[in-house]
Image 1 (cartoon, rainbow, N blue to C red):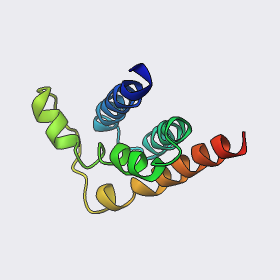
Image 2: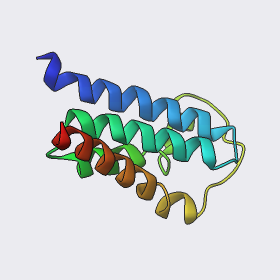
Image 3: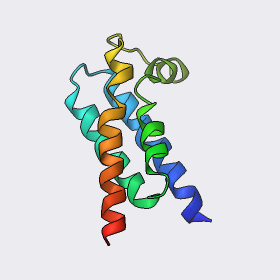
Amino acid sequence: MWKWILPFVFWTGWGLWTAIADMGNDDIQPAVLRLFIGAAILGLWRPRTWWVWALALSAWIPGEPLVASALHLTQTYRSGLAGTLLPPIPALLGGFLGRTITRSI
């Protein structure tokens, strides 16, 4: 049972941490690194559906206003079109890396 639930728990925790940490910071590098590493871990766990997990993890960045309103936090900046289109790139690269590592082992 844990084998099925653990990726969902990790996705929720890692995504929430990424969204909250990115809210107060207008620097893009920490968010890119978190997306890459988190998607790589999810790609290791679920190599057949690595791209679904990567896209789901990258959805936390455009969803930051929802997280901010749900947790009563203030978002210091407004994300534009780049905040919606760029997060899938490092997430897909990380997920592909995780899948590749799993398949090579």
